[in-house]
Picture 1 (cartoon, rainbow, N blue to C red):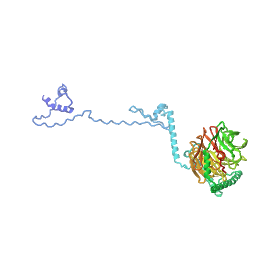
Picture 2 (tube, helix red, strand yellow; picture 1 turned 60 degrees about the vertical axis):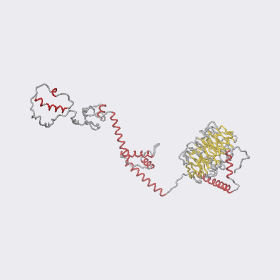
Picture 3 (tube, rainbow, N blue to C red; picture 1 turned 120 degrees about the horizontal axis):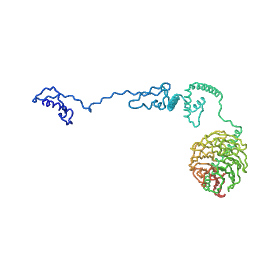
Length: 585
């Protein structure tokens, strides 16, 4: 029993070490076998203070034991993609984590395609792998080509690029190719030649040839300098002399009359203009007649005002007696639609233009006198020179031409527009011609020298109508930007911009005697009259049911004719009696 009592503290200490949560006693946990002899510790009397016992080392519970870092497994070596000239590496064993290698390895692709010749240690590359490798090689070649091209010196001037392409035997331009695209093409061509080792040799030979040619050319130019001009026939020279003589007389008469009107106290220009504008404000529809089976495209009064000519898309032109608008004659000869008609200013002969690329000259009886052939595209507008000896034609081949009416010979082929030429007009003196076209540009030409003396820029869309004023220094143009511009030839700039219509302006005409008012025709189904003093609206001629394609004004301003796509001819009159008319010389 003493031994049991002496062992109680140790058991108690063990229980305290295990933890307070244990409810089982020591005696109950001790097995029922004989107790082994244990050397008892020295007995300490109870009266003496019990010294603290040294702590008995105990093993901590498993939950407190810190985990030991596992030994890292050796890294798994991934197989490399087999190169074509070398045998593929031996496939390593399967990884311990259950994986079967990387998806990027070519060995999987080879397994998919199948392996052959395993005894020789070779793999069969699948078709998919071969295509992938070919694409990679091609991409690498293109990349290297681009790097090589980026290192080459390529000219930045487009003319130099074209010259270099020409020297290399390549097309200087392709369809729809721009400057930067052309330069990139030259760069790639030079890079390809450089890769083939041919660039230096080829460029050296071409540069040597160019140096020799340039040296010889410079030597010739230093000796003789020739001015640039296009030599024309003798008939053109004679025509220029004739036009100069004619225009000098006409200009002198015009200036003399202007001085007289200015200095004579009995001449009241403002009163005359007021009367003319009042007459224009009284314009009203007098006759309306069906002109043809198809839309009408042009109209023109004869110089005596007794006849009116019209043309249509059927290709035929018709003559109508005035003022009742009764058909008197039909002119048939064109194989395509007729685009314009014009009466001669000196006699009752007329000319027609057509999309069949010809112009025809007729008499008032309907007989064909001349056919003018030479344009390579359809014609637009035509006009007679004030002398009546020459005919001007505008065409979609980007040129306008001057013809001799008597002989039918082409005197002048004039270029200058970058796009189709649509309208043409002659100055009252006969010295100047004006052309307009789809390049939104109007040009003034000196017929005596052949030079372009003015380029009138202002319209933002194609210019379709053009006309000189009888005063000699105003020019009117109308176009697809719905505006009519008045140009002052003395100041060489636009004087007025009239927002005339809500649709494009098809034609403009000044009153031919004094230029007191201006008439514009438009695709908004109306024609409008404008004052030449301040270019304010005077009258709107409404009545057509479709686009108004052409307009003409009689010499004294008493009649205005309009034709339209509604196939009708409309004659507008001032409705004034003969007693109210005023003689204007």
